Image (cartoon, rainbow, N blue to C red; front, side, top):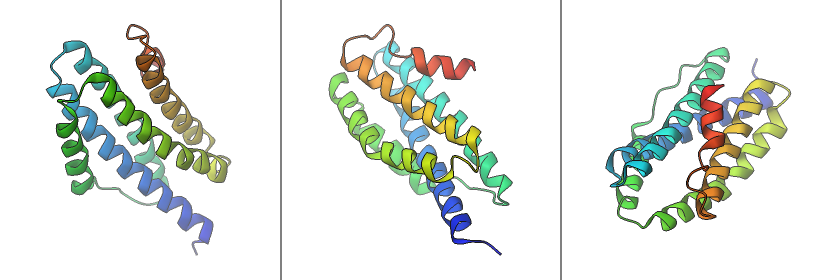
Length: 158
């Protein structure tokens, strides 16, 4: 019999998985439509990181006996948001990402706190994912375009 904690854990995994679907769709569109090659490459690296984290969430859901499906709505919202963002100036785009990360960080922290002992590897992976994305945005906004992807690339190599 599933407990309330189990139900909450499963719900949070599903939400995180669909957030990954949305983010990956966003980054995929941006990696194809941005004018500058360097910007496309940066969004492609973020897309790859999102895919890796989503695969971890999918494995965690499978361990709980669930097979997630990618929400078409999440893909449409993510792709649509990206299409609207394509013409924005780079700094504006980064500020939007910064706001989105500010909104999602508390959820990641809560999940780590609530379920970190249940799945420490996933908890740490989610934390590193969030931290790498935040560092990318901070470094870009600070003018460090050359080194902004260091954390993301380190996670992709790991």
